[in-house]
Each structure stands twice: as C-alpha cells, then as structure tokens.
Image (cartoon, rainbow, N blue to C red; front, side):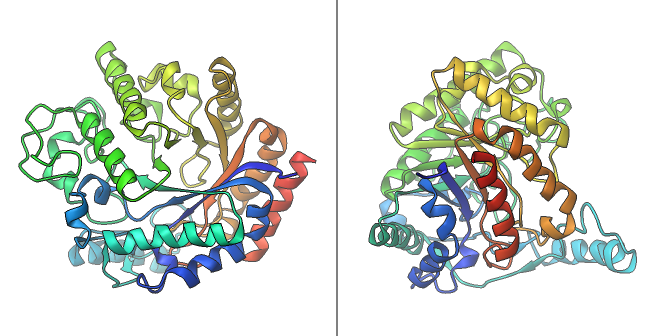
Length: 400
C-alpha cells in the first residue's frame, strides 16, 4: 500500500534544457523520484514557471506565442544595476566579510541561469509532456501552476501595470504584494477572462479568480497552487498583518469562496503563513470556512523563514480544522532540501533545521496526507540522492 496520499514536488523550468523538447527532462524527474511516486497514491506537480504574473497577464488563445519572463534567475533582481548592487553587498558580507548564515549568504549572488525564451505554447508543451509520461508509466498525476502574490523570481508586467492592487497601507511589509481586496483601475488591455479590459473598481481578487480559471482551463491544468499565503497580506509574522477588520475579513472570505466557484472541481492548493490556523484566523483575517475551499494546505517549514516552535502546533491546528470541516482540506508537510530560486542547500547550510523537520515528522506525520518540497535547486538539478534517501527513510519510519 502507498505510504502517502500525495507527493507534491515543486518543479521549475530550470530543469528543462530545451523547452522545445521537454520529454527527456520530464522522464528524468520520474526516474529520480521513483520511490516517492511509487509510494504515493497521487503525484501533484506544482509547476512554478515564474511568480504567476504570466497567469495574470495571459490574453487567451490568441496570445499563445506571447513571450514572458520566467524564473530563470538566482536571487532575482530587476536589472543589471540591481544585480550589481546585490552582488557587491554579497561580496562584502559573505566573501570578504565571511558571513555564513542568513541573507544574503543563503540567497547567493544574483545571476541568470538560462537565456531560453518562454511563451505559452512552449509552456503548454511542458505541461503536456508531464501528462504523457505519467500516462505511459501509469502514474496518477495532477499538474498545477504556481501563483505568487509578490514580485519574487522574475519580472512582473501585470503587477507593475496595477500598483493600486499592491499592498495594504496598514501592513508594514506588503507594498509589493497583491492585495485581493483592492480595487483596480481601468485597464484597456485584453485578458483571457476580461477580453474587453478591466472596468474601474473591479476587485483584484475577482480578476485573479476569473483569470486563473481561464488559464487553467485553456492549458488543461488540474488546478492552481497559491503560494506565500496568497490572499493574506503581511508576510512571515503576525505583527505584519493589517488589522483584522470586518471589511478585510469579508474581503478575504469573498476571494477564497469566489476562487473556488470559478475553479469548480479543479484543485486549489494553498501555502500557509508559517503559523497555525488559529493565528491566521485571529491576525490575518482568515475564517474557518475559507479553509474548506482548499483541497490541500501546505504547512510551510522552509528553514530560512519558519519559527521552529510553530511547526508542530501548525500541523496539529490543520488537523483540527479538517476535523471541523469533515476532513477537508488535506495537510501537506513541507520538507526542505534546496531552493529553486536561491542557492542555499538546507541539508548542508542549515542542517540543524533539516534534521529538525525529520524529528517533527516523526511526531505528527500521521496527521498529514502528504509531503511537499522543492524538487530542483537554483541550477536546475534534482535533489541529491543522499539527503533525498535520508528524508524518505524518516518519512517511512513515521508511518511504520
């Protein structure tokens, strides 16, 4: 019998050396992660093309040959001047200064990994290669696209076009993060879900929901993975959340329910705040019934951000929520090896946290329905065999 219900690897285009012929790289994924795939009821690939701006900017079938930036950077900076500034800071602090932990040491220098051009037609071919190889191998596969609320990883076109949608004035660190409760300015650009453009006053979350549904339908995807607490502005710590007013709570609720309506039976996965559900409800204007709109919630354990003391309470809070909502949503435990957008390697650079995740899983793994992790590093390489095997052994032991 499979040990896990869901294996949810995140994969980026860096793993594919030729966008016109993705099948060899896709087969490499299935070969490399054979143990995880064979011991899971389903494999749900979270394909992280960029930061999701290409989803928001998608104009429909007529735009299949439109090119867009993708997550081809390490430590993305908007331009050459930004890269120079970042790299000077990195050199001063990490090479000359000897800093070996935290940022910028863990992020590494800023550089571009690939000059391949991406368009929607090539991206559709990559999705299709995953589906065809899974069918050939008899693997129960779902493919999701990643949607990020901020500007990380690559250039933003839609978010730059709509600065009024970014950030809540009363949240100290959300100036570049999409606020689903914001009202949009008039926009005459044609989008897949809004072919006549966006009317002034359209709620940002309504646009996101409709546009995401249109993109996933056109691309024959199984759903969307909402990253970095999408919908809840104020990253990483409860003190950064805007006041939980009735208006904001209702706006957040409207977004998640409207997204579920737009997506229908497709999958909606959500990456949490790194904090337990009761904290999200108290501080981030979340509501219990919102969790019922998700098929799965990933408990975020990434070592460069997480409060270690919150990992176990977070998992247990997800189990309580699911019990109140009739078993929905599933809980995915995230483990940490590498990062697709920064060069640190957790099992080497943050080994204490890497092993701590294993120990926590021993206690709470049976409360979870799956495991999720970044399946490739910033260089486009799969996770190295030794740490991968060590982690699988810890997962297996928890379920024996």
